Every structure is written in C-alpha cells, then in structure tokens.
Amino acid sequence: MLSRVKLAAFAFIVLTLPLMGCDDSKKTTAAHAGTTTQAAPPPARTYHSRPDRKPPLVRIRTAAHDTAPGDVFIAPKMVVAQAGPMIMDNRGEVVWFKPLNTRGVTDFRVQHYRGKPVLTWWRGHVSNAGVGDGWYVIYDTSYRPVAEVRPGNGLVGDVHEFLITKNDTALFTVYHRLAVDLSPFGGPKEGSIWDGIVQEVDIATGRVLFEWHSYPQVAIAESYSPPPKAKAGAKAAPYDYFHINSIDVEPGGNLLVSARNTHTVYEIDRKTKKVIWRLGGKKSDFTMGRGTRFAWQHDARRRADGTITLFDNGAAPPVEKFSRVLVLRVDGTAKKAALVRSYHHPKRLLVPFEGNAQLLPNGDIIVGWGAQPYVSEFARSGALLFDVYFGQGNPPGKDADTYRAYRFPWHGRPRDRPVVVVAGDTAYSSWNGATDVVRWQVLAGPAAGRLEPVQTVAKNGFETPIRLKKSAAFYAVKALDRGGKVLGTSEAVAPQP
Image (cartoon, rainbow, N blue to C red):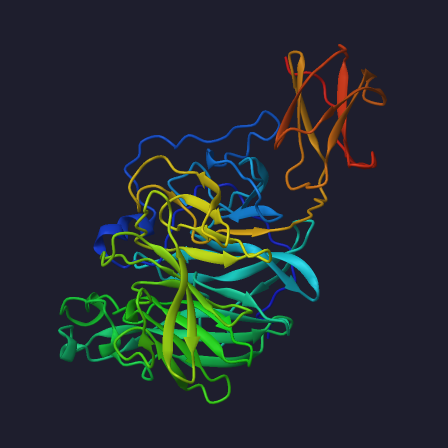
C-alpha cells in the first residue's frame, strides 16, 4: 500500500489559477469558481530573462519604514495573469514566484519541518462554495519538494489550514459531505451538510493521529448562514453550516478552531474531542465585552501573551462597516472577553471573504486583507508601517486576492542557475528565489569558453538591467554575495538578434 505522504519530486506548469475562498454567498460564487468575463489577461510584470514569469503588478501605497525583518509571502490568484506562491521584498520586487497549474493555491508561508525552514502551501481545486479538494506540499530552501501530505480515512485536504506542529505532524481542515434532514431549518428533507473536520497526521508516515468532527457536537442551529433551498436529493447543495477555516494549537495542547458560519471560536479537547468552550456566536460561554463581537471571522490564533487574535470580516453578508483585526483578552475563569486593541485599514476595507493577521516577533502585526488585494503592516500602536496593493481596481470577487499574507525572514538558494539575456547594449540578469545575491559580475568574450570579467553592478530587483560597457560575442553573469563569493554562474549566451 502506498504511503499517503510521498517523498517524491513533482513539477508544476504555468497556468492562470482561479480561486476561492471563504464566502458561500451567491454574489461571489463565480469568483470562487474562477470564472471571469475579462477578455484579456490582467496586466503583469514581465521580464526579459524570465518571460515565463508574469506576477501581478504591485503598487506601494505606504513605503516600508521600521518594519519587522523579512520578506512578504502571498499567493496571488483569481484575476491575475498567473497565480501561485510569491515572495516579495518591501519594495514590491519579486524574490521568488512559481506559477502553478492547479485549481487553487492557498496559505503560502514558512514553517519548520524536521528542524529546518520550509515553504508550505495547499494545492488542488475548489468548489463554488470555497470548499477545497486537494493536498499539501512542503518545499526546502532550494525550492525542491520535500514531501506532500494527504488526509487519511478516505478524506481530501481543504484550502483553509495546513499547520506543521513541533512534533512534525500536520493539522489541516477537511470538508466532508453528510446526509442530514434539513427540513427543520427550511432546507430539503433529503439534504446534506459539510461536516467541518480537523485531522492530524504524522507527516513521515501518513498515519492519522487525531480526527474531530463538527457534527453533531456543534448543532446546525448555531449557524448564521441560511440553509440551501428545499431541492430534492443530490440537486440540493450541501449546507455549509459550520465552515471551518483555521486551526491553532493551544499551549496545553488543545485546539483552537474558527468556524466562519457560526461566528464562533471553539476550544477542542485534544484527548476527549469535546468542545471545552465557545467564544462568540449564539452559544458563547463568554460575556463579550465592548467591541469584541465578531462575524464571519477567519484566522483565530492564540498568542504567547495569552491573547487571541482573529480577522473579523464583518461580511458577507455585511454586518459591520469595515473589517478589523481584533486582539482579545479571554479570561477562562471569569468567562469574560475584553478588547485589547484592534486594527483596520485606512481605506476602511470591508472584506467579504478570506483574511488573516500575523503577530510578528517585534510586536508588529501584518495583515492580509483577503478578497481585498492589500497587505499591511502595523506597529503595536496602530501606526501604519507598510501598505501594498496588487489588484486591478475591481470589486472583491472580481479582482486579485490572496487567502493569507505573512512576513518571514527567508534565505533561498535555488539549485538552478542564474539567467542572463542580452538585448542590444543591455544585459538582463535574474535568479528566481536567490536571496543572498548582492552584485552581478558580467563576463564577456569572443567564445563561450573564453570569458573574462568586464564589469560589476549592484543587484536591483528581481531582474537587473545592466548597460554593457564592452561589445562581445558571448556573455555570462556571476551572482556574488555580500562578501564577493560566487553563488552561481549563468550559461554563456550570445546577444539576441
């Protein structure tokens, strides 16, 4: 029997990627399915040296100042020329971009596996209601596949969460269709629901270690989402009454689970698999203090100081004027929730689906605005330190987006070679994913095997244009680090005609 975790190489091909997300309203169904009436591809960055890469245009709205260390990690999708995991610096310049031939990519970030930093994301395809059918991938610092993770027990991996634990296990979300009589709720008698599942597997073996189901522990009546219309049998869409969208590990080992459609965050006992408490929603075990109520939320996380952060969408349908990131003090003894602070975008963005908040080691918080194509970093005080936009100005659901956004320090050393193209009197050099290149050294000569250094320039963005000082039959470039060490050398090329 084949292991569910395949330690094997797998390649991806360029293709525009639709997606996605976390709103099952009819208004955004077409967007989640990836359909678009746009006749021409959206505008994109283009490169002489890498014409196969077409990342979205990026506009810096607030220049980075006093930000935390590291690069920005997003996975642009929907209305983009190409979609896939992307790392960019504070200037909006691409560090690494990988177009994918999938029906979805989400939750691109740095995690740790076997004590080493790795890149992880979900890939697969997604339904009109934002329910994923796929698996999870792990790449090393050379951008090579290390492992892929698939659920056990005949289930499939959902888009919303893939979390590697300190024990090298993986926690992820699953949606599973169950037959349920929905007539008490105005739905079909021969109806069905999406059961929200948390599964944990050992990454190395694929063995299932833990599995929790929302149904029947969480009653259908807890949902704020309207049931599907009373159609007969298989024609009726499953009722997404729960919509699980994040999992986090509590300090004691229990699980913190967010369910969008019940407006609730749950603590789940890791041993008994019972709900310990509910925060928010119709059956909250906590008295919700002023400013703490949330709706259609995402990305609930327990922080080191004991607070809980979450992305309060407040839509869709809208129940608030704008979306917020909430930092909540949750007193488990007194059963009271208090607002510590909140953050919102200067444009008062209302985000109908997706979104996240990452608390950074220096106290800053970086926010991915989901369906609204913005990424922002705030100081603890609320001061805006960085804001970037990568959309086309279309309404949410018809624009670019990223499910989540993060900032991480990252050192990538690709195994392929740098690339150079010479057109006219200019050489264009790049090395997708190489983070330690500081300068480019140009080599020139009468033959591919007879090249000598002729000039050195500072690296400038993903692709560095270099005005050549010497005419030659062949050129190559060497990538140099800060100390002048050669990190890689391109092939020798002749100038383009």
